Structure formats: structure tokens, C-alpha cells
Length: 441
Image (tube, rainbow, N blue to C red; front, side):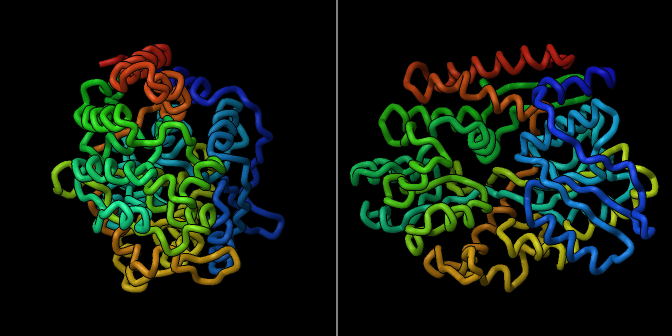
């Protein structure tokens, strides 16, 4: 696959929306400081940058929010295609890294960092997500090990004393909870959840080796396990397939106990606090159920900091220092974790103060025992350790997710089986991959 074809992948995958781009041609400011441009939709990166500049007065970091994750990727693609306007550093979700590796936008950081020393710094799931075809294309900035968030009041009402530890128990609990009038969980068509559940159930549906791409959803063991479970629960009306995630109705349903639990990344803790404050004290967290009790988990979300390939030589040392500060320095990590991000470093996950936390932070800075005084980070920390590193995202993952409901929607509406819908999605993905120059293997 030539560079032109690879660059075209990002164009087709994201679309042609044009966004004004911040130029980054100047290496230094008028005062002689090295000036870095950074793109981030997450405000905590800006807070970390301010702390960094205090410790590094010779470097100015200009953080810009160019929009949502999708808009950021469109802007990156537009700048790469134009040949100018790329930031020096950008926040990027793990799911999107392969796309921009294959379009030639991101620098291989193994050329400037000692990857042998760094490997044990980060959790297995995040480290795996930034290492592609032997190169390191971002430094893990946060993570999303999957966890189980459940409404203890509903579980108590249903006579369930402990959260499920296996998917068989989850199914049995779902029947008891449905008898109370609630649903154990909801899913109206979430591509991120589908991939995360494949990962957590031991799957590895995608494999890229140079130009050869494997897409094997319909035969992947993790996908099969998830689809069998969801099909059975859909058929028996045990999951809410109508309430869309992140809508006001979804938040209301979590708050009034219509939906009794959710499967998500550890970062969901602060989102629940902000979106469902009326549920304070009712929710608890647990490890995600497993197949047979053997620890295994996947990641749902998370992002890293990448340096763009065309960064001017005069800025590279400053960019290296900034990325290292945000992702490995205690002060830089705390600037993000204290504002809701979930860490990707093993050191942070093992710190006594972190593990002992029982409160979340309200918008006004006050403490809130949302999880009823539970030491929730003990659960999240173990969840991160249980993640298997055997997972790859598609080299056009944002596009793949954008057409998920076009194909899978027929399952959630009850028109066909999950596996039949998945077969349609897989065929669409293979056709798209071939159009982009990949050889389907």
C-alpha cells in the first residue's frame, strides 16, 4: 500500500468537513521561547500544560480545542492533506491511532523514547493500544478498563446480595431484576460496547499485518460469546434496547432505577456523578463478569498523546518533554486524574492514596460519596490489571463505528438475529477495506 493510498484512508474514514486549522510553523516566540501547539478536547490537558510551563519557563504550550473527537480527527486529516497546519502534539483516542499511523500522520516515538523502560510504566491494555507494527505512536494519557456499575438498591430489591461474577450469573440476575420492573442494563446499538465486550470475552477479531487485514467478527470467539448472550437476553426482554445511551432519557432511567446497571470504562464514575446526581449513594462498582471466573477484561475508551510526524526539528525536544510530563510525571498525571481522568500508569494505580479514595469531586470542589463510601479505585485498579493486551483496532475504526447501527440496528429492532446483523456489518467493513487498498486475509 503506497503512502497516497494510506493517506486517503483518513480522508474517507472521517469525511470532508473543513475546520479552520491552527498554524504551527513558528518554532519560537518573540521572546525566544520554544512554542508548542497542542490539540485537545479535554480541558485537563490545558491544566497540565500550565503546570508544565511553570516548571519549564523556556517553553510555551498553546492548547487549542478544535472540537469533538470526530472534529479533531477531521482537522488532523485536513491539515495532513494540506501539508501544513498540523499541531505539534495531539490528544488521540486509542481507537483512532491505527488510522493515523497508516496515513503517515504520527511520529514513531520509539525513536525518541526508551520503550523497554516505558513498557512497565503503563497498564497492559493501554501499552498494547499505542504499539502498532513494532512502533510506538502515542504515550498513554488515560485509560478505560471496563467495570460493572450497579444500583445496589435494585439488586437488594431483587434479592441479589452480590454483583454477578460470571456472565451466566449476569443472565440469571437479569431475570430477577426484570421481575421487579427494571432492566439489568441497556444497549440500543453501541459499537464501542460491542468491541469492548469482544475484547473482554477473549476476542481478537481484527489483525493487520502490513497490507493484509483480517476482519473476523462472525467467527471470533469473543464476538460469538457476546452475541449469544445478548441474543438470549434480547429474546427474553432482559435488556432495554430502546433507551439511547447519553440521552436525557438514559440518565433519567439510571436515576430512577429503570436501568439497574451499566458496563463501561472506569472513567464513567465522574460522568455518573455529573449526569445522575440523584443516584448518589445507590451505586457501587464491581469487576466485570467473566466467562468462568478466570480474570479477563478489556478497555472501553482512553486516549494518548501523540507527536505529529512533521514537527519542526527545533520543537521535538520540547514536545518530547511535554508529552513525558503529562503521561509519566506525578504532577502532570495528577492534574488530569484530579479532574476525572482515569490513569494509565501502574504506579498511580498502586498508590495508597489513590486506592483509598471513597469520594468523587462535585463541580464546586466538594466531596461526594457517590458510591456509598466504597473504595472504588481498588476495583478499577484490579480491572486495569486484568486487561489482556491481545487486541487491535481497525485502521479505520471511526468509520467502522459510524456504520455500526446501519447494519446492527436490525438486531436491536428485533428484525433479525445479532449474528445475521453482524455478518452484514462485517461484509460492509471488508468492502470498505478493499476500497482503501487493504488485502483482506
